[in-house]
Length: 206
Image: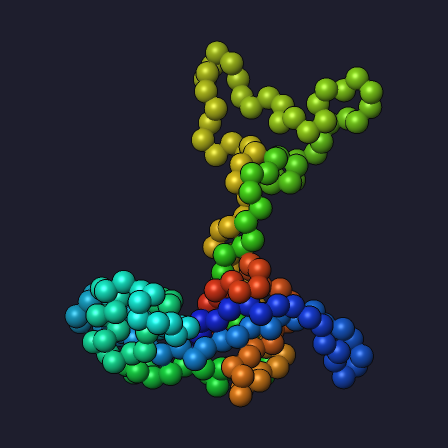
């Protein structure tokens, strides 16, 4: 299983040998040092913790600093833990784009773009009311439940509210190019979030 942390640089398009245009996302992925390994015998489960993006010591808390010093790791902004079946990692090992090859399919996870408070038409794809003169129900939510019985709104009712800014995974994105010297992955299609968004890149689970 291959795992990397990275951030979205942006989107562009490339031409294939057949002359087709493919929309692609460019991702700066790694290097990601392995900062901790948990085992079934000691911790009750197998996992690996990796870090990303070096920063200054005064930019993290003292507990985080002490945790990284235990393994002589560099000062890292992001630390993420992932469950694994078998341990193929070693403490201090640097993970980079060499873990992937052209044509691989990956799952990419990140926070989607936050869109603030949104109405039913945008958030839940509801239809609007008639736009003719005299109609007073253009974008109103309409009835949200019964009156006397049960006298309340059921939880989970689709209504206006906060939209976006949630953890989202896009599956089966194909790697079209790898620039090893700059640790760049170029994947087909779009990934969650805006440029600069932290991403998790994982090899497709069989």
